[in-house]
Image (cartoon, rainbow, N blue to C red; front, side, top):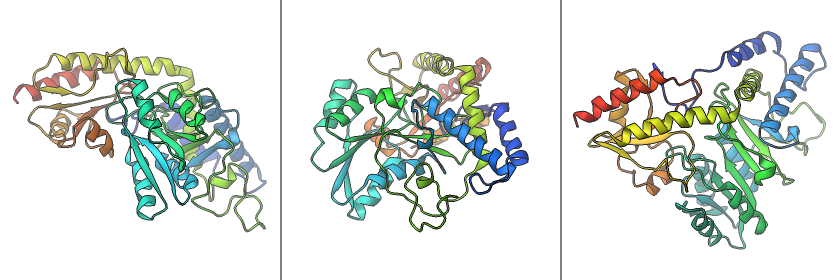
Length: 382
């Protein structure tokens, strides 16, 4: 199988990740912070070292503010519901995933708060203006994707963070599609909250997310319970990470994340991005010359930034049908609406969705050739 669905979950996983997960079950099978015996201490050390690796990767000097969550969506919920207060509002981009939209829509239905949608324009100046004109005295935060999970469009995060901070607002980023693929430095980019998925560009197993808190703001907690500390204090601890991590952590997944970050550091993010971007550029160039292929972005535009993924359609075919036909050629892609209706509304693809191609560091030339030949055959008969 040629796997090109890495924007959903990366595959294959590096051998070091597989081995780290296996070893965690053999040698780190104890609750960290819950006991003083050797295995518990060894497990606590592994968890803290993984926090340190993530802190370095994402440009923050406080490992205790690396919070492990069940997934990236949970991390986004932590930020939104942790900041929400009666009468407030959030401003989000027109490319957001339902991980951002649905928590806000729920709070809106409950009468807690509201949200506004700022269009991501073709130029940064207009994008910033679109955000700025929506800010009012009740706005608490700007929330923006690092890259659209459908079209790869990367908004100007640096300028958005500057805007947010100039208005005394907080700035949160959904980095599900950029963590491990593009350089992220929370301190330098002014990101107060970063939410990341471990199972995508970080090459860890599914079921783990990361919340990076890069500010002094304490979020209200979604869950409360045992943390291994202050057992006779009935209230939730105030200190990070315990404040946000009630219950037992998934040590196999955290071990896999640590190994995934090691893999990324060895390969270098720049090399990973360049490899994936080269593949996407080649596919884009070939698609431009094919009949009956619909493209939605200009990957060669000097004024726009894109993550290494591409959406397309074959004329007269629904995206799901194209994906089904590609599956017959043993090619795995994602089709449909990708849990991102705002993005499809923005790009006028709400009727049939798109077919998304997302390579990884492990994608080879022969994989790309099979894809191109298969799409050519499918499109030729339309």
